[in-house]
Image (cartoon, rainbow, N blue to C red; front, side, top):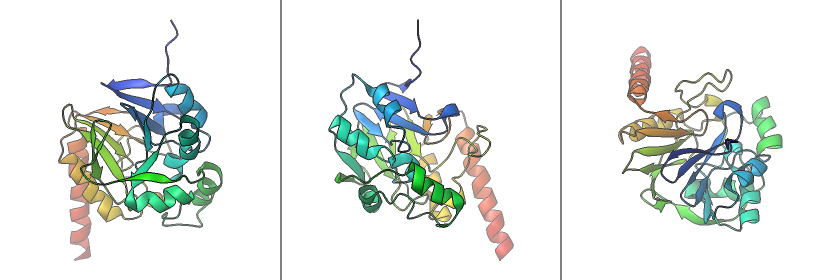
Amino acid sequence: MHKDLSMKQIAKDVFQIPLMPRDSINCYLIDDVLIDAGIKSSYTKILNAVKGRKLNAHVITHAHADHQGSSKVICEKLGIPFWSSGAEKRQAETGNATSEYPFQNHIVTRFQRKYWAGDGFAISRVLKEGDEVGGFKVIETPGHSSGHISFYRERDGVLVVGDVILNMNLLTTWVALHEPPALFTTDQSKNKESINKLASLKPKVLCFGHGPVLINNGELEKFVRKINNKERTQKGERL
């Protein structure tokens, strides 16, 4: 029997849609809501994966080029509304997906702007901390971008992390927990605060924008201790 590799079930009503080899870019389906939409050429894979399913909304964790690239096409093809946090609304609606990147003239920024970013689409619902989406609670996790949000389901500990943490080195594609690269991160200090905020939820299953899903057996806690110890050391050296 042919095995459908376009979607991987993670938990009840939670599916990963890998958009690139080795899970290097992912989006997720939670109940009837699509989270993130890859780059602008990802729409075919997404539409094929959700074919035959009734979707009622599309939401982004943040409006970077590898998360909103296909948002406009998806929303138009499926006739569904587009949701984001308030701080991501302008980028989502204009398609200016690299506007917050710290290094605007970097070759990677220019590449993503030209080849990955999709057109903007009107946001019909602005999400905030505590809102419910597809049975998940919205968690405000700024830092990687100013309005980044994550999604948590308390009953089984499933957490859609977005890019607050990566489970992959983006250069080598080796699997391991990492902070997002400074090249794409608006405020690294705030992102560390968001990492700690997510860790405090004690999630059992972590779904990343980049890298394979992780069944947490202490890896998250070890990672958090590592980055917190590193930050304390760096602060001590500056004193």
